[in-house]
Image (cartoon, rainbow, N blue to C red; front, side, top):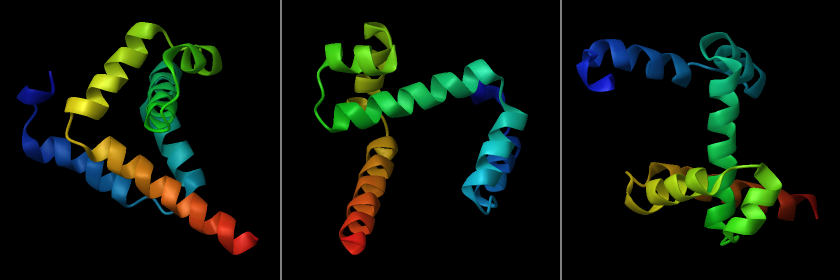
Length: 105
């Protein structure tokens, strides 16, 4: 589906995302543009990816996220064979959280 959309039309949405100024604005934007089920699916996949990066096992991930083994497997493939961006973003967030945690101590 996405391959048939002209590049300019695809870029518009991503440029709009880069214009968001706060976490609250992100919540509102995605709530407006996505169905609730789409949002929950994306949030679940992101949580699964974060847990996989922390080397959690499938059973633990299934228990904590209610994700199916198929979803976990799909996310694992994205982390291992995708563009690498998802893993990089998770690493950045983890480093930021670690830094903020040490500054509070």
